[in-house]
Length: 199
Image (cartoon, rainbow, N blue to C red; front, side, top):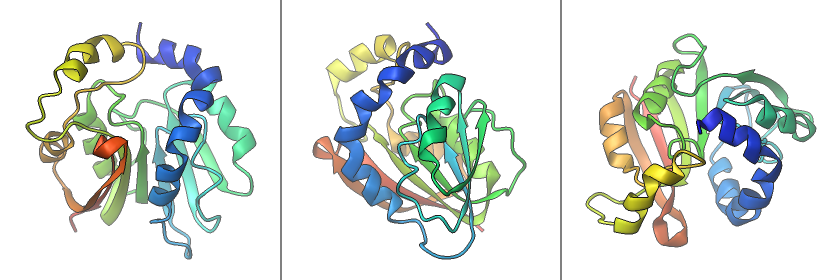
């Protein structure tokens, strides 16, 4: 089963599975967004829009997701945000270079088949000096995690990968440098990371 089909089926249950456990980590990540100004913010993998009650309304937002089923659940959460939604692939973004000031990657890098392509494309559409806020689950460098690695090929077909090492993805993506990296949940399996595009 490919991800487009599986997330179309998962969409009605997604909030029940994800909303409560990650609410605090999501809130802390989004608190890094500037509270003032009028920036162009890209939400790469907007899902059902669980981020939307939290960011400041002063910015312009574009949310992308692979499935129409997910995007349909975004609309009731948009509130007063200036938000456009786009159906598309995070690994091949339909945007011009240097389009956004900030990108959010909440629970997307460990889902896509090619996280390097997703991060590289995110960097491409960011303006020089732009920031990326990442919230996701990653293995540590050198972590054995035999069960996660063993089950990852099977689980990845339905929902998410369990074997992504963020440092390897960042090194291969280029253009981005690490600003901060903090434990977010589950003893550091979930991490809150901030990156900056080199000027």
